[in-house]
Amino acid sequence: MISPPAALHAILFASGEPIEKKQLAKLLEIKESELAVTLKLLTDSLRGSGVTIIETETEAELRTAPEASVIVKKLRENELARDLGKGSLETLAVIAYQSGATRGSIDWVRGVNSTTSLRTLLMRGLIEGKEDEKDKRRICYSLTTDALAYLGIARSENLPRFSELQATTRAVVEEKELQEADSSTS
Image (cartoon, rainbow, N blue to C red; front, side, top):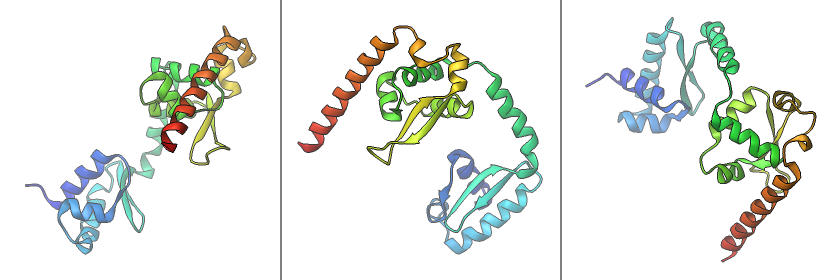
């Protein structure tokens, strides 16, 4: 059996995102007051390791330590220098032909979750996201000028079969939205 700090380390590592302290205490089967001590022990043991614990009043997360920022920055630069993968190119194409596409509509067109591709495109500055005026909970994505330069075109209208494919995409998305509206009122 591993110690509570080691178990906490494993949970935070596996999660990859902030976890509520109440949930951590429950997972570790300890009291919240014991969790504070466990977090302190883990934080102390991680000192100088390149990772650290970031805490708010209600959550904790395992993150890269500030002193490792230079090397992590190099990693990110290498990541940005790589070619875009198939998924990111597909996502970029959907956004190019359907400006204002939401993650839901991109996922629907591609048939897979596009979160990672969107993140990659946002990090590279090829797309930008703005709040959807119809539904403030959604983000609408569009190409940036960097994306147009990456694609070697001056404007979206210069894409192959732009008018035809944009009209088809718009019709399919509108049909999907009508189906969703009908199913929510039924």
